[in-house]
Length: 494
Ligand code: FRU
Image (cartoon, rainbow, N blue to C red; front, side, top):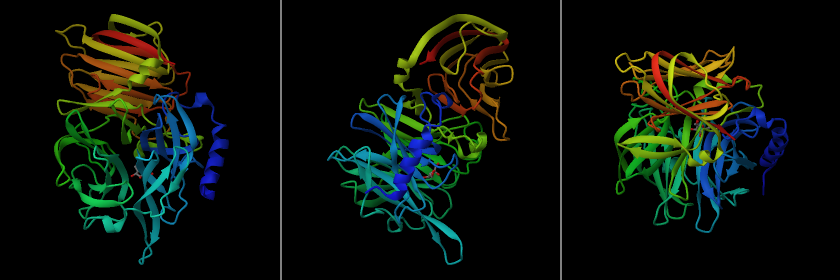
């Protein structure tokens, strides 16, 4: 049943994984088993465990013909690799098994829905990557592709929609037992739209509606949609390509977009009320959510971005890691994120200082490390004379550091990894406009060997960046131009 292509990938990954030392990977963020990883796929809870699949090219640390890698976890922090789940081994997916998602069928089987890609030679001697939606059914380990694949193709597209940009199905089950999925699509205006499909049994699918249209406002094509109700509000997540910047909200290139609004079940249309970035840092893309058994909506993203992929040399044995899983909520129409609560169980060696006066450079006994959970509460040291700047540096030694700096007068928080050891002229800094009154700010900073994730004001804004700084750069220091009064609670994550 298993194809030659999949058998080869499984054999290869098992051997290649062994040459990567545990210490050369992130500790509690999922990284690729070997080779290349991009989007999270098939994020689901099945048979008592979380399953996470990913866009995967095992043979080199660069994007190639897409497989689905596979890992499972009980706590979303400690992952165990399973054999690759899908390989591009059928006529309808021979040029790639692109992104998709998973649900559990009533008979207990695990259903995967993914995009099959076929590079079609055109009459004018050009090529068109035709994309269709396909299914595979399995037991959490082995998956068999559905004999009636593809289940959605050009016949199920609304008029004017492109055959080459039709991808990334996100499937879910309704309370009445029927299924729905949203898929990224490109209409005739060249931008993006999200299509909604329905199914009675998860196998036979019908076009329902155009759920939402970009009209060239937020980038071009919309990739990797997700759609769910959260705290009484409908939320549409998508990752637009080719964004233009807008203030401090959106940056150039591949971005992440969260829209909240209303959903008309009858017509299958979404009406937007608000929009925002999902992540304001450098490395975050193509997030996908799962509804946990306890009702939490948990999101995980590719902790990378297409525009910054060459941060790391392709000679390394692995490239690509996932973000920390984040619990989502809606407050005053805004998406909030916080690290999953399971992370608290990894907190050890608590060190706390209260009311520390920071003015100039400061180091604190016991505050260092590269696997760290650190909460900073900042207050102005002198309300009459507001400080100019506060900064925290980490992954630091004499040569290297990455920093977060905050200018209260502009309310701008900046992440800067220029001195993280990167040898490429790519984006190394990003600024975010945060909410701060009189220099008060709360930061939760999570470090894991090759990344930093910053949760501002209990998750009102999040900034994510990767950094491949050598691990002995583990210093952490503080700086203030002016006077800052700081509380700090720091844990090692073990
Ligand atoms: C997003 C994406 C998806 C596609 C996949 C291919 O990062 O471009 O739209 O399915 O990556 O690997």
